[in-house]
Length: 136
Image (spheres, rainbow, N blue to C red):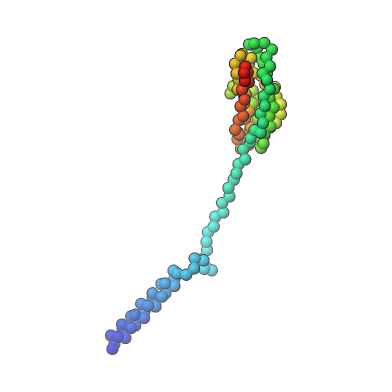
């Protein structure tokens, strides 16, 4: 009889221990009052780059073949602090975010590429380019 009591006692102790262990890890995913959770807030920064909204060169005006000429250009931008004007990749002027400017262009019978690049504190925007000259 004592063997039965001892077996029942061992079974009761094991069952109690099993219930105690099960109670520690189960239940809700919500933290209890004494648990803390770490959260991290992230923010996304969107950089608005400067953009050309228009770039219009006039006709190349030459005084004589082989001499210097000029083109009057006009432009407007969005979110720019200035514009860099170039002739064939060489800087011709750095000007305000919108305006009209006369720039020197060679009168050598060749086509020339005029470019306007919007500038801002965040960097350069996408340039606009146009070709002027014979047939341009």
